[in-house]
Structures are given as C-alpha cells and as structure tokens.
Image (cartoon, rainbow, N blue to C red; front, side, top):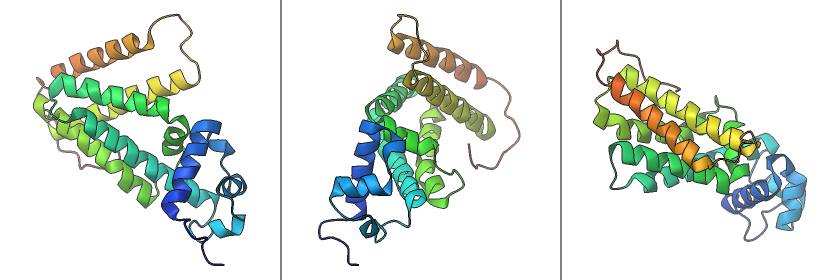
Amino acid sequence: MSPKIGLSLSTLVQTAADMADAQGLDAVSLASLARELGVRSPSLYNHVEGLPDLRIQLAVHGYRCLHRAMTEAVVGRAGDDALHRMGDAYLTFAREHPGLYEATFRSDPRDTSVKEAGSPIVDLILQVLEVYDLDEETALHVVRGLRSILHGFTSLEQVGGFRLPLDLDVSFHLLIDAYLTGVREASTKEPRSYLPRGEV
C-alpha cells in the first residue's frame, strides 16, 4: 500500500506527540493515531514498524525538542544564570508537553537512536559546567545529579506529589541554588581519576 499523500514520518510523529500531550502517552496506539490522521492502520506501517518503533520515534523527537529548548535558554548566558535558565526550560518543556516528555523516559535507553538523541543534552550541560573548572569524572557526576534533580522534581509535579500550598517555582529555584552550592564546592576539590564518558 502506498503512503497517503501528505502523510510523512514527521507528520505522524508530531500528531502522536500532540495526542500524547493531550490524552496521555498510553492513549497513543496505532489504531488511535490512524483515526486521528484519517487513514487506515496498515498505512502507518509505511513509516513505523509498529507501536514500539513509534514510541522510539516519539522519544527521539522529545529529546530533540528538549535539547532545542535548553539550548535556546542558555544562549548568551553563563554559570549560575545559565544553569537556572536551563532548568527552567526543562521544567517548562515537561509542563507544556507532558506526554512527549513521558515518552523520553519510558523509551528503551539502550536503543541507539534514543541514545544519540539524548547525548547532545549531556554535552550541553557539560559545556555549561565548564566555567566551574571541574575534572571530567566530577563533571559527569554533576551532570547525573542535575538530571536526577530535574527529572525527580518534574515527575513528582506531574503526579501531584507536591501537596502543600507553596509556590512550586520557588521550591524549584531553591533546589537549583542548593545544587549550585555543591557544584562550586566540588570545583575546589582535588581532581579524581579519569572516567570514560558514557551513559550518564
């Protein structure tokens, strides 16, 4: 069966992303996506191999969008300001695209295309951290810590885990400030042994 005119992989993935944001990731199936696109389900197999492949495509798209948002946030910024703005961009992306964000962390991290899509985010954070003069191994630990903070806070917020009537943005910025205090302290310690860069 020939692909429907006007239907492309990018259109398919963007439609699936919009559905995931509006209805939740689990609401996106090949059948529901086909209905949304106005095509028969078999037509989708011209672009994806099945639902697992669609989930991978969504994760790749999500990582690329997140990287773009984080990159735009730090243009012309450095140090603490850059890290705060990068954190804000991450949180804003997750708030505005909850389904697409969920697709990024529910994908198989061993998949080559997913790893390649997520790697630039690690590289971006490492670039921002260069001003703190961290040795390479410590910098990777620090990236891992920031990832834990950003994903942990975002995930708790998305499931309604913060129940006290306090401003979430204030809590988030206090958390980043505390993290930055630790980063500055880490930069004064003796360099550690080299650790090859890999999955953070």
